[in-house]
Length: 414
Image 1: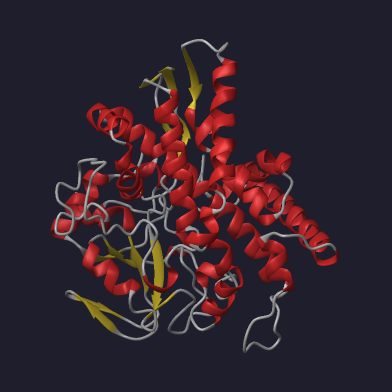
Image 2 (image 1 turned 180 degrees about the vertical axis):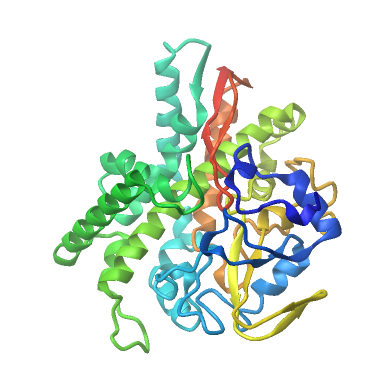
């Protein structure tokens, strides 16, 4: 079978983690190629697939030619493989200048200076989360837990509820509803099921009620700020009801899912690379570089998509206006032309120009917060546990869009 016959839309090819071995071949022999549609491909339409770093950056740095909204004669497009009617209404599926105008509504809440003020509270939360894990094991010197659900997921969930002004006790049902967009346990990608449709209805109703409550009783949170702010140079000056609902869903989903997957995937890498765990434990000054290595290594967003607005050429590929262009950041982050020994996990990697937070005008809005959360969990884990080991098989999410973990059973010694 030709390497280009490998179906990148068959979720079973991603059910045991991102298929790095296959993408290593693609980077070498087919850095960009036309992926023919299969029975698994959303919309039954092919797309350009890019697996290399420099070509991915070229797309990211040319938003005029490669749109997050749409291109050619498409009525809409978006940043995932299937076309979405919400493209142009969802922040990560907007083009400038509207993208920048909406982004400015919440920028101040995500600046490094603002995020730094959260550190004390984040650390106290993390210590409490780890403390509960120890209590559940009788406070003994050793124990076990599911690191994903018991530790990695908890801090991002608590924090994002605080930032959007949702009651913290609602975090479990919220993440259960959102999970249907990140983990396709059965069926094909973005294929509706009675369960997923019901989850989307529940999430929509919850978001609508939360938005309505903040219209009449705003508080000091990002959702209230977005609801009551006006967009510079826009008519009408406020986000529509649909845009507010989409903003709530995006902020919660992005804040809860990607960071927890980075934390869990990072811990798995440290368990599988004992020398790196010990290096980090002996030298906490490496925490910062380790955070970036975790984001490179895990690449929580496996791919993104753009739509060509005009004919273009990348390497030998002749891209036509309206074509879908999919770039795999998880592959670009292992490109040997940019990263020395890219298949090695190195906590002291420097330089590390990874694309895990995106690049260009769509650089991740919450990057500073994610970095701080990952760093604090790392520090507290290193201070709390002397030894960490797997305590069963790792269960990965079934998705070609998000690199995630469902369950990470570990045993530990304090």
